[in-house]
Length: 292
Image 1: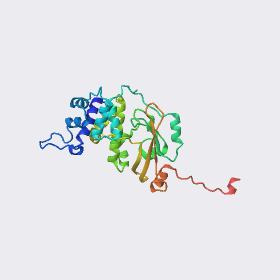
Image 2: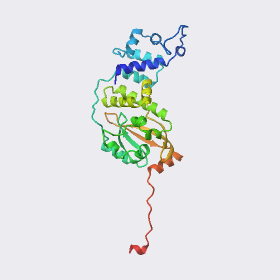
Image 3: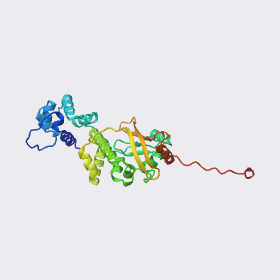
Image 4: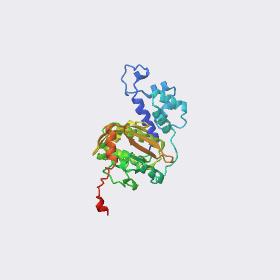
């Protein structure tokens, strides 16, 4: 990741989306070259010098104080997630992330297996699927081999699948929303792990092969999404409205567990149950005479 460039792009994108009228400024009758706030206007409203703010947009954030970042975030009307993102970009981590592949621990695999009726999977921070249980595989990727997560070099990645896998894309009834959330989440991870080469490679691959990803990436959406709803159209189970929850695992690398459930008594619950639970075994009655 190019942290200085990302910081500048983020600030410019938010400045461009805020019109003078929205912050109480009366635009001069002369023609404006920008649709949003000018640097000078944003600096004035934030109480910082134009030179100081310009340095930030150029990626030179060294020495930027908490008060300056807070003032800029307030002027730009950033959300809580966006404000945290601004701070992460302004003060990037210098820690180098190991490039070795990650694996789900034996205890995590045991936990996945202990939920036979709940689709669940373990992910790393890049959205690589480290492991899934049988219902999780049946729900999200029945077109892939069951053991697909076991090979680090080719294991599935939810973000990559969302943009480049037609079957997984078709699973989502509201694909535009899912795509925006995926990019917003990836942006946050990239800001906190700027030296993660595998993450950089993922972004590069998606940028090359998906114009839709490139467009969203340039918009710089930022949002934490640890729970919510998924509106799916499963190829065999049909439409389902599910709730997902994300549980952060106690690992230094940021692994997490995602589960999918349906509202009790709903059609989605019945569809999910039919998908994840095998049909009952038929027992043939044997005459008493045959047992002798």
